[in-house]
Length: 443
Image (cartoon, rainbow, N blue to C red; front, top):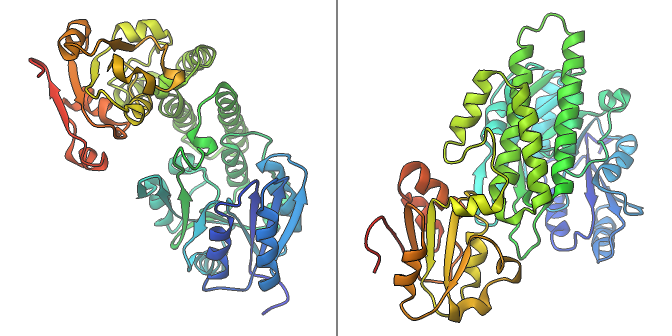
């Protein structure tokens, strides 16, 4: 081993006992072991400390630092000046690297003298196993320009390797935000004129959590996260404008800034607004206000692109009135189950399409989750002649009958409205759940 490690891995950890061992296993099993691992325990109250300590005994290059709970950004920032590796990567305490990843990062960085190397990104867990398309495109590029639009669509921190000296001398740190703080950090470094390359030899595996495991920040919806997201993307927009003022030779300023506006609106709709029935009224009003503001800054081309991608719902302007959305249901869901319907109801209300209504038999009312019982688009109908009476009350163009208590894929309603059918690959992901989609007689 050389006197200094080749790569430092920085891991912020908070109550990470469920997954931290898997994360550390992925590091001790790397093909390149000339590394340093700094785990910053952000005030954990579970067994996180004990687990890390055990690994440190067997692998002294795994270092443990404790701080009072201050957030993920503070944890990462604490470790940056302590990194002694020639390069540095950031890995969350529930994610993992494939065995060749650190060697792949280092080899590409040394070969090209790059300041930043971008690898592949694969999601796993919660029924997901897929590569991020933008990280995939970037990882295949030998040279990546500062204002490459694809960079704006891959902010996750774990599939990137930074030259430590340049990062430390830049003074760039993670902002104290709870959503997309990685984007501000990443783009700030990119705008320093960093030499950027891609590599297919490194893959960070990003864990998607089930509800039972506890949803991650990016899988949650509340006004605090929406405000943090807007703050992050607004900061990126502002520092991009400053960067363009310094870089007079770049010709795609308007296209690039419009891409930031589009991404901000796209995520605001896709990650937050589309989960309409999980969002409270205050948050919906804030989303509407921000979408109106963003659209006022967009050119016609960007507005058209946003509308076309969201052709199943109106987004300019967006509707934030729950009663009005309920009154304009396009899909009527009949839960034809007189027993436990909890899984079905919960997953239906996770849908990424909000214009629906749900009919449930009276005998199944006790199984409706408490927070769903008084929503404007849920109706409880007597068991006797349930389907006949529910059909009379329904207003949707599409009629969807669900007779088993299974989770329903959150894309189903969107596919119905956009394509007039449910694709087979979506049905398969729903554990073989049987659907009837009809526009006439319902049996």
